[in-house]
Length: 470
Ligand SMILES: [Fe+2]
Image 1 (cartoon, protein in one colour):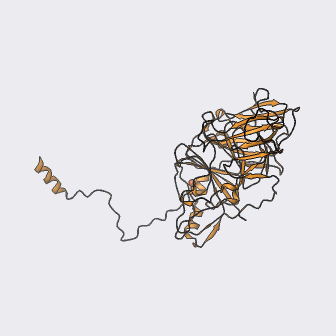
Image 2 (cartoon, helix red, strand yellow; image 1 turned 90 degrees about the vertical axis):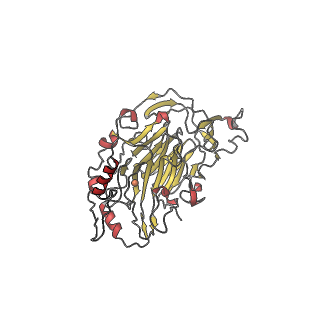
């Protein structure tokens, strides 16, 4: 079965399909039939609409969900600013370093002392949540479950969560999602959730998308299947709790700042919902990898799982790209990635195993690298040598490994935390990787070097002709 063999068994039911109109009810008959907002919704529930796009967004982009809940989300005390000292999600309070150097980080530290909300660290980013334009790249490391009476949401963007270590048991307003390493999860802007850690400490990466929402990439001549297939995305089924006499805290990430409001009712009281705006997960082991079966290898865009397009067709604010285990069969081909300079920025991470384009163990699970706009990169010296001399038999690469990339058309700045405070930047990355590359260039005897200047002819003729015309 082309799917990840998880050590932690699944515990929840899901609805399958990407971009599908889903509906789910935890009590039979809780969903109104025909109408969205009847005068009296079933069972005395309140109707609440959650908009993921503007009301007037084109139909193919329009995303909204109707919630039928015990009490509306609006019933809470005013939000009060509460920045956590260990937290660092706010791009306003720190300098963003824009630097052209290639960067690589050692694995980020696990932190067992904090929960999900306190364990978010902005490492890099571009743009501005207030303009709904750009991305934030966060590292998370936590060891404690969120409080039973807490819920978190980001007003800034959609969280694409790439889990590297541990297990996330996420209770969202729309139902539960279990996330295990090699699974990713997307929680859209505004959806409230709490994160439990049933398996101890967790670590991973988040791409926060300030602009729009993720889509499946166009398939062009590939046809109507392959890459990430729509049916493999899983959305939760409705689940609700009942408590209107308690004490609950809603934590809001709003322009990178954190605010807290209190309320007496559980935020997880949605009895039924229907719509297109919901969290979902996907097992990267189900990705149908496409590659060359003749020579050369295609651009890495062939490995795109999800894409957040800009207004310019074919140019993404962010692509989520993976490098799964795959067969390499190219004849007369340098099989690792070519050396390149990219007009897009590339942030990479490693979920597990060894990435096939790098040797020496410098790029490790839980670590990362950033090759910003036009920062030159490619295989390190050892990988180049091996690949240049390898017997070109069919071979499987990346067995047991999963590397990924957040690729963006934007220049990505690195936060103070990312560059200094985390203390994970490898000072010798460039030297280790590329300054060791040796020249192999030779001009064999008898091979003529071409002149790049226009032949002006004999000098005497030129002077004579000038005399004639003077
Ligand atoms: Fe690259």
